[in-house]
Length: 74
Image (cartoon, rainbow, N blue to C red; front, side):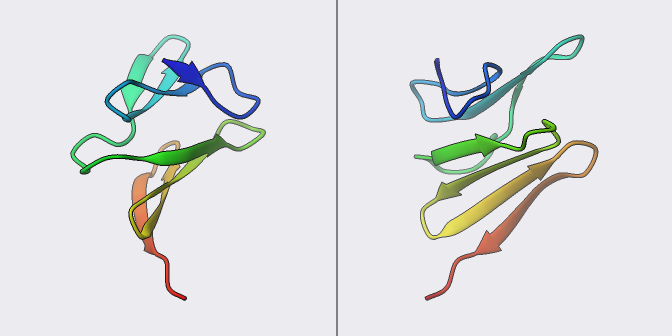
């Protein structure tokens, strides 16, 4: 697992899944069920949101709300 951005608890596994470690809750796969590869995860300064790009879509995961897909259009 390689950590990305300034976060030490956010990373991408060899299978390109987005993984988040939370103390007391353990490891969570934010990209579960999505076809890979997933690129460029970043976490907000407060740790409440993670975003990444997969194909032509932007995904946003928010603590307590889950994951949303935001289609990218040019």
